[in-house]
Length: 259
Image 1 (spheres, rainbow, N blue to C red):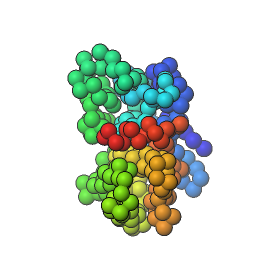
Image 2 (image 1 turned 90 degrees about the vertical axis):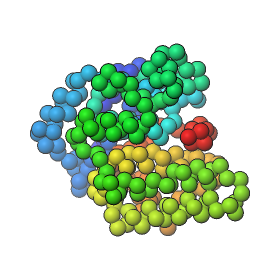
Image 3 (image 1 turned 45 degrees about the vertical axis):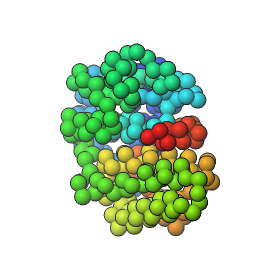
Image 4 (image 1 turned 30 degrees about the vertical axis):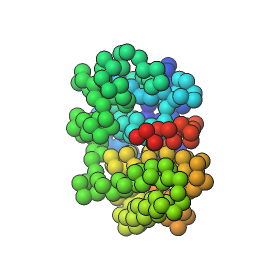
C-alpha cells in the first residue's frame, strides 16, 4: 500500500503526472502503515495548507514537460516530501535558459528553492536550510555517520569515464561499495539505523543513477555478493522511492559527467 504524499499544482501543469511519482513514500511495520502521532498529523495538515515553496528544477531533455534527471534535484524534492511541505515545481529548459532564471540565480543553475523570500541554490545549502526551518520530522544525520557512502558517487563517475579496464577505477568503486555493504550489515538498514535520514536522501538517488548508467554503458551491476547494498537500493517499503520514472541512461550519463 503506497501513500502519495502530494502532487503540486505546478507539477500537474508543467511536469505531467510522472513527477508526482518521484517521491512516493512507503511506511510499514509488519505490513501495516505506521500511525502518526496526533500532534504530528496536525502539523502536517497545517503545512499542507500553507503557502507552497517555489522550486525550480531541470526539465527532461528527452521528454518535454517532465522532470529531468538530476540526483541533486531528487535529493531536494525528497527532502521536501519527507518534511510534508507543499511546493510548486517549475521546470527549466537548461539548453535554453530563460532570462528570469539568471535574475534569481546569476549562476543559472538548478535546483533552487525560494525560502523566506530568498532564492537558495546548491542541494547541500537547500536541505540544511529546510532542516533548520522545518525540524520536524528530523532528518539530520549524526555527524559521525554523515560521511558514510560519500565516496561512492565520485568513484562511480571515475569508473564511468574510464576507458582503461586496468586503471583501477572499477576496483575503487567496488572497494567503496564493499565498505558500505559492511557498514549496512552492522548498522542498517539505513545509514542512521532504522530510520531514513538526510544521508539516505542524498545517496539513494546517486545509487540509482549509478545503477542505470553503468548498466547501460558498461553492462555492469552491483555484485550479488554485496547483498546489503542491493537490499538498500531496493529498500522502498520502509524508506523512500528515489527512482525517477522514465530515467534515460544517456541523459543520466550527461548529468553525472558534467557534475
